[in-house]
Length: 162
Image (cartoon, rainbow, N blue to C red; front, side):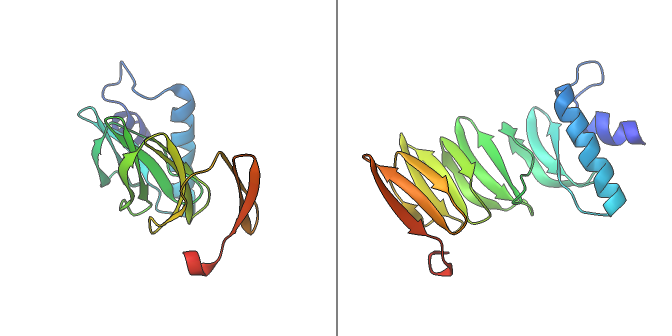
């Protein structure tokens, strides 16, 4: 049962695993903790050369349609890739950000740093652009500190911009 849930679900065949060993350990640990805590955890699965997510019972929850993906982060998001573009899906498998970005950094549960057409932007979970061009960004407790043309600026995080 253990082998069926882990090896068969995460590798296309047993002789040539598709998952590096360090990720296999992480997946095993996550799966084991989800059983112990009786939690619903989504884990990556590869089917027909594409990636999706299954729950701890082995049921496909996010279709295997992505060329690449990462595991869910602490905020409940996973970065997914189709061709050379990235998007973001939430813990229920719903697309949070469309697959149009060159890079995505999840700053917290509401704010994302995205690169599109050689331009970094700060957007929120509703896809509103909060900063449309900056050189560097630092997340502080209650504010985002942005730098542009060697000048400092700050953007306060409030419910109004969410």
